Length: 89
Length: 262
Image 1 (cartoon, chains in turn green, blue):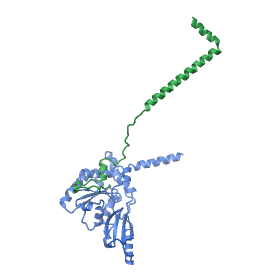
Image 2 (image 1 turned 90 degrees about the vertical axis):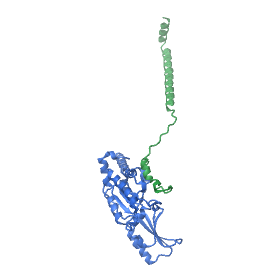
Image 3 (image 1 turned 180 degrees about the horizontal axis):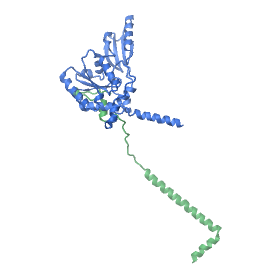
Image 4 (image 1 turned 135 degrees about the vertical axis):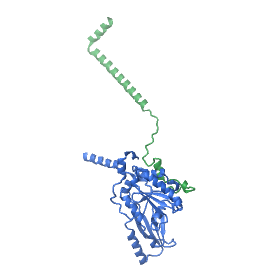
């Protein structure tokens, strides 16, 4: 950890020992990792996926309910007559 | 399975404790001093006299952080001993008598005793022998240490760079960095752990701010950054570093939590 390779003109200008400059500059401790800002698309992707799931759920439920209603009409014709009467009134 | 969880919890606890151990204490307890290499370079095959002489040297240094080797080499001018640390040549000795007290000296004993007693470090002031240069810096050191909350655990010791008794210690200190031998200025070495000398403050670098930074370095939590790249040079010394007394720095920090830092 010496600094022999550095040149200087007089003892007063001689570089300080590395252990001392490291201590002064706080380099003898673990340096925290430097965090870099990166482009973050996770929020947009999350919104898109959430929207797609909602649309899919609405579509599936709509088809399911429509099919169920149609099936009920076919199996119970009286229910169909009642609806028709309601429409006339 | 529950036992495994308990073991993991205990290991995690130990690891978290390890990270709050202070630098000076962690290095003393966990970091063995680096070894020197004392090499006997010779051109001719070893005579019986030289073998005996080297055997005595090996026996004298066996409890220190140094290993001995003989190397047959044809491209040397004279037979000699070389003291090497890592890949750095510290000194050459052409006479075996020069190796006397290589690993032991009165001041080194005194410094080691302070370190083993739980002190934070020893501030070792290497003087030039010129009072006009030495005294002002010594005043700064003394006033800074006496104003520090850690003053009780930081002894200051002085050493003259012309001391004959401590010539090996002076030589090793001046080899901590390659250009120190050419700089005739007062130097302040922070000596801690198992006789590890930090790269020194010198000339106008011996300031209150820098001395306090040295204290901060030694009283900070021992981060992995420091453990992986420990500064300083281990000084050659004969000592058993087992069972040092508890580090006194912890008591001071417990009594004054505002002094805690990382």
